[in-house]
Amino acid sequence: MQLNKYLALCGAASRRKANYLIAEGRVAVNGKTIQQFGVVVDPESDKVQLDGRDLTIPSQYRYVLLNKPAGTITSAVDGRGRKTVLDVVGAEERLFPVGRLDLDTEGVLLITNDGDLAFRLAHPRYEIQKIYQATVEGRISGKAVRHLQQGVEIDPEVHVRGDVRVISKASDFSLVEIQIHEGKKRQIKRMLNAVGYPVRKLVRIHFAGLTTQGLNVGEWRELSEKEVAVLYRMTGLKQ
Image: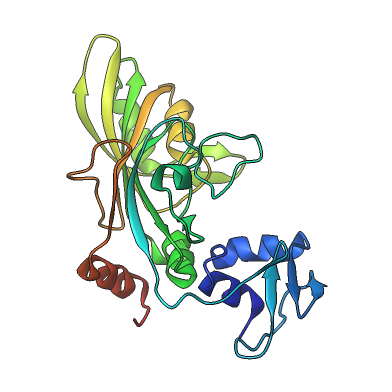
């Protein structure tokens, strides 16, 4: 089995993030630090360590749905001592968030130790639906909405689009809903900035069919077996 897949199955990180852990020299196999990709390990006989700690594939995976509060870091650890989403959940085992939400963004966040599922949910190939509600400065215009739907440039030669619905308008702000399938860094905020409407507040209300219904901000729950099965079917994995 590829080393990055083994790390993912152990819940160390998604497969993509596992490559960074390897490149940073944080992974050892049988006492030897590995920094090249493509290394194959035998889960039955090889000893794999991350930051000096032994890794084993968990006998049972966990799937936690968090209504992420603002002010928390979407990371397993933070070198600056800030509160992370894992601090909110208080998990004893090694878990990690699927994808990222900004420090000040609230809403649906999946946390798990199932690396294969996390990898696919975060990969653009699977076009996982994400829906956000953004409170923006000003009364958003129809022209801006059409521009967002047709596509805006958020980086040189990087164009993204979304399905946009205006929920309400007031004299100095608007509430809009944007549906996307990509996952560029700070994508929603950058899209709205590109059309001249800075974001006051951002909440992800939908991710891969999951919502925060029944959860107050900062609350979490375990996914049901049915919900996990839907995620597996959505990403083409077998349970």
